[in-house]
Image (cartoon, rainbow over all chains, first blue to last red; front, side, top):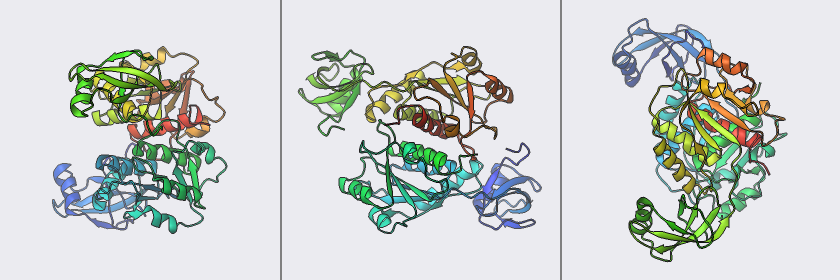
Length: 247
Length: 247
């Protein structure tokens, strides 16, 4: 990291270009002016997921409606690996954890799916999205993965694009280890990771998954992993084999 | 998993053999008899980290001092991969998370280390150890990783056994990706993962690490990871390359 980069990073919706003015919402204005006590002229880093990262100056330090002005692009926009994470929602704290880690490890889309054994807790997508933005702000990301509304797993499978590999963590002991299964798959191949709920897939779901033309059943070792652990482990192995954890 | 295996799993200290009586402590007795309402004759699974997993019957349903009798060994003892996790303690909830994931993903020893930038929060080793046992009980493990008292990183490095690879997550962009760095290393090679604190290693620590004869600097991709995320990602990649996530 650049030692002189501003420490405060904000995700904004506005387009970013030299001289662009960014009207902050009430929450961000309050954070900068009241909580962090920034005065006019102070600099922060901003990103919107499209235009890279910019150094921006606080040009109107209004407590409720502050304005930033973009000065200089400090980082190019990154393109996230074409990797989706499909996961069955779990308890609130562990779901928060999964989406936070998905931001840090990097994937293009987070897709909640409902399975037979999913305990249908309601998902607050706005809250999850805010949590993902916060993770990206804190971890230096210039992208925030997309977040889809929940979908039935059977619907996702019926509508699956042929070219996207559907990597699913199969609890049957016969699946090959994930790293071995991905040996020889070209880096950049579109892929999705599917993590089942606590309690696993229903037998008929596992059967349908194994028979799906895009499916690649894989194993994550001899121990039983919680769903959140499996999601993080699988994201790391996918980035190493297919994504951008390469030279 | 065996469908007929008892659902309740307990970690005990006592030796396990056919007919062995296991005197439960007050907490476990209360849990089985008062909370779970088990009566004499009910079966639970027990493990001690040495003798595999055993089916045991509740032979004295005393609320404060219950007794189990081991009946039959249901699983052999596993040997955990010879992998150590050295991590600089972080905030309590994230430290709990790291030790929980270390149990699930499997490593032989968890070793807290103190670095220049470690915020010296006090570690309650008894509490962490209880958390690890609970993770092993819930995740079907028959082993619990060892937990060492905290040690200064410089002391650990000075006393490092030559044959144990010291894999450290280097924030310098020049380190090779971890999966690539481990290509060709023999499965079963003794290894340790070192995860720095939030804020990274101090420059002189990073220099000393890079110069250490056992050190292997590696990268975990282009994004900045929190310490807990790095620990889980590195454990998964280490298991895939060196540990028991193989056929």
